Length: 300
Ligand code: PAF
Image (cartoon, rainbow, N blue to C red):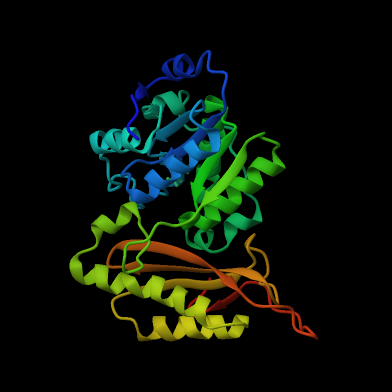
């Protein structure tokens, strides 16, 4: 489905594009460098709001979520291809603001405190990242006023935090998580994959293979973790940051039922993350308490 895309660069443009629209608004915030995973989010937003609804995509590389020395300047910018991808996936409006349209007074004095969930996993090595993410997402929600917003499960901690923010701050937007889109060999689609040379691309497969091994290990938390660790221990060319098994809301790993297995590693100079749903099976007859955030193999 290709749509006629309205391109809004200022808040006023965006207001104009939204004005008079009575239907539901679906929103997909992105930083551009769009790939099939983003297209799936846009299509999901369309499914949520229906043909009469309005699907808005934002493309904004948010400086607030990059610490000094992170890859802000290196982050890929591919606007023409992104606009074509938005139209092809069925978006109605694309909001492409310059930095001073989002942060007219420079860095904001009031920001969102993401709370304790932001200190674990990604937050352990990127302590200011989620404050930057939640602050821009809150601002974009304020500008777009969506009924539903769609985020990828690929950035699972981000999704959990946005959900938490929407609930805790009563933002009145339904936050939807869409399943990770993978390459045929299992590698999660990511804007950063383009930085991998062919050898690194092969090495990066260890992440998804570890997750699949953990998911397929059948049953206990220990079995899931040790199957994933075995794959990562045998892997070449990756520097593991963490492997962690948690509850689906990133709390303590449950003794049974749904859980989440998450991994992060550096492949060359590119940091990759991935995660997968794991079913820890039915509750045993007698349960023993599990430690908080069962981490393994260099976990944070
Ligand atoms: O996932 C991303 O691309 C970004 O973190 C987001 C949600 C667009 C905020 O800048």
